[in-house]
Length: 284
Ligand code: DGL
Image (cartoon, rainbow, N blue to C red):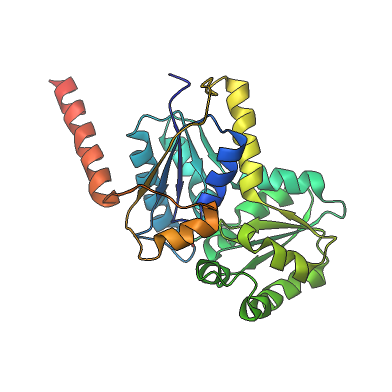
């Protein structure tokens, strides 16, 4: 395998650009292929079976581009589907849950950790399993309205603050000292969440933790690119949303010039057909 192959990264939509941004900062000479499943977002309110199906299709799509590893940027997909993906595909796969859980474990002094995320992430119990096994006390809270509020750009709007107060009150009462921002969108609300929680609460950003883990993994397995100069990024989406550029700017901090729209279902059926055809011709 060539170390110069790109890293594939997928999310339910544009939120995963927060993870891509950190990956680009940490590994500037790597090439990336980003896939945002914008036609089927949100994953956060979907069932486990549906998220598994979408995550498998997204991974197949990325692998068809010849990549060296997959980063699952979406918390909802990581928390529900990472096991299935690792079982099904040979390629190295890193999600956002264990890097964030590990960092929270190392940082918390009181052992009381809060986790916020979508319904899919919270109900999966993925963070809970990982942190409870280390003897920590966990308080989880779904914050579904944060996603549309961020996408509307209402980052320090009174409405967002009011909703934030409501969601975060139980975590404050539980007296957590560390809070995992378990959704691609939440790091964008860091200043507001810090204001509500107080300055002495440590906020864990899964994008930063995952980028560090990806770098460590690549150095350890020697699959990091030795390319000089910046890598290139290719963007794919399953639908081109009307406000794509505005939203992409919120997450990535810059506009994206070229985005290719693909039909993810057709694409993954085609890959399946090719595989069956290969198998048939081998049998003959
Ligand atoms: N990307 C999702 C996550 O991190 C948030 C948006 C959605 O619900 O799909 O959980």
